[in-house]
Amino acid sequence: MGGMALERKPLTMTDHNESTQNNPTGLACSIGPVTFGQGQLAVIAGPCMAESLELCLEVAGRMTEICKELDIGYVFKASFDKANRTSAGSYRGPGLEAAFPWFQEVARQSGAPIVSDIHDPSQAPRAAEVLNCLQIPAFLCRQSDLLAAAAATGKTVNIKKGQFMAPWDMGQAVEKVRAAGNDNVLLTERGTTFGYNRLVTDFRAIPQMQQFAPVVFDATHSVQEPGGLGNASGGKRQYAPMLAYAAMAAGADALFIETHTDPDSAKSDAASQIPLDDMPALLRKCLAIYEIARKP
Image (cartoon, rainbow, N blue to C red; front, side, top):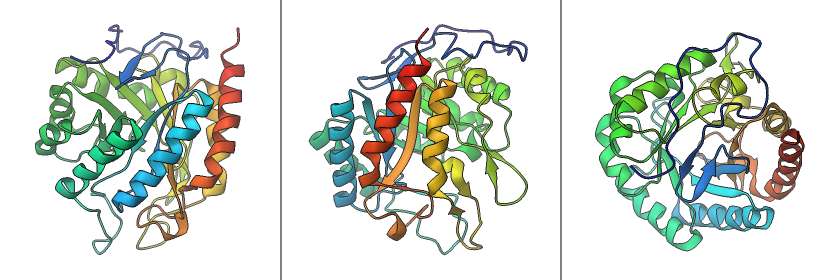
């Protein structure tokens, strides 16, 4: 099994006075050469959807340069299929077979490891031929067969916390991956459903979930308004940087941000993606807060 093995921990959460130190259990894993959970900031970023090879190459190239300058580990992310679009008429993406050659070219030109989400156990073996990390979408985080299939590939598994899940219940999702023989697992916090078309972020979830695995904070999905536009999801991208800064102060091991050269024209999550030109300043501030939060 490739990557850095997690030390097994009991799945019962400690009481609600648990330590708020950064990653108090010291759990770690890796996506390719990028380590999560050992005191160096990592970033997962890319366009929400793999709209074209050109877009993927431009975003990956710019992000690789930015993260190299800041000494931040970088992983490229884009979806080949958005299987949970609000409307049946919405474009879902290029599909697995069309997108995977793009991902291979992105990896070749940028050197960045690649993560994308899968939605069905049958996709896992094919995805593992190209991806360094298989992502489990938030709505599917309890799907045992999907978790087991992703784990069986030996690739890192990033499980996004369901909007309907308590942080401490995500330990069971981690255990499903471990039970299939794979200890290289991440959890991602992306907000919790609050009434209709709204999400809120409880930053206590970060240290609570770090008892099970390193924790990534998803700044852009946390400002989504699911179905908020009627036939599409809305969002308030102006709040994503604020949440990213708060997550760094709360001790998140890594940051997940969707970014696009022209977010308003994006084919998915147009309202919440961050303009690529804004990423250097945003990450510079995130890194400064991350380093302050880790001082004794």
